[in-house]
Image 1 (cartoon, rainbow, N blue to C red):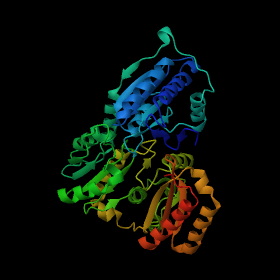
Image 2: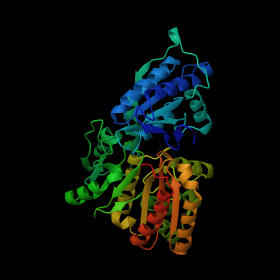
Image 3: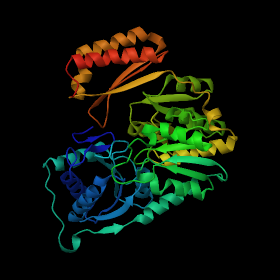
Image 4: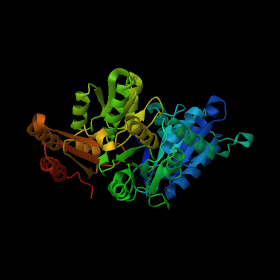
Length: 449
């Protein structure tokens, strides 16, 4: 990770940690780097979520791009995976998504994608940061070299058509609930499910610039659980603010996590001879229950650091076809270069219809170990993580758990937060050990007030 960019872009509170000046400079660099530097006019596509500040950042990025001679193609409110898809299929030099994903409305982020629709490489990111810090001098475009903006809502429509084409089955008479989190999926998801014949019931589809992710979506799935049961729906899907993740709710109101999804679709692929290398890619945050279920059906797995970036890198390097995170970032490398919440929900529908089984039955073999995860806002992530007293506390918990559980303490890639997670035989044991480590972090003075 660089000075400004983490595992999922440059993220921070709008006009506090991430400012419109930053956006202008990012646009200035990208417009020059992919354009004038190469002796051509750069062609760059931009999407945004529904945050009020996304409009400010969109215009700031466009200003920087045009000032450097690039043409900025604006997809308006759309999802991160749609920008990744259009960047790749329409031959853009790079793509930009304005979103802070599942974070609250007052945060925002700038995600950069290369011409293949993949997360930008570290080398280019570091050059962007050098320009932000004034270490590079870039000329402005003049006269007919100045760039322009192009309305590119057609790109979003093309992506919608692509999603519809993904389904092998009609959704006729299937009752589906969608929680679009007042975010980027609100103009896309219902249209896709309606086009495929589903009886679609939508909640949290009235964005006002301030209510994205607020008590809704994949981070507050309890509302979709209630919605599915009350409406008597067959299944529910919840997205986050930029719709690159998806969690499900079965017909009984139970949550189906990313780990369940990896098992359900991984097994479906294996049964059809489509699971290349017989492996599913997970992260270190996946539950023991997933691994036990995969072991029983003879599916192997790999573990990466937390972050869909690392999952994707592993998949591409080793030729694996499915991977993801417990949080709902699921990647199908045959169809996408990033996590795609709507695509994930379509794939879950495919398994339900192909096997003619309810979601509860498909997910039943995955029995989770109790898990408690608490986030601790700290003054300095490295200082807290590397404190000898904190490390001693973590080692003590690991020794006491032995083979009956595990502890994981890691830094957030996007926030000033340390995440403390314990899996064990009961919630009480998990809670006790998580709190014991947090108490040491607090006693050592690392907690941010």
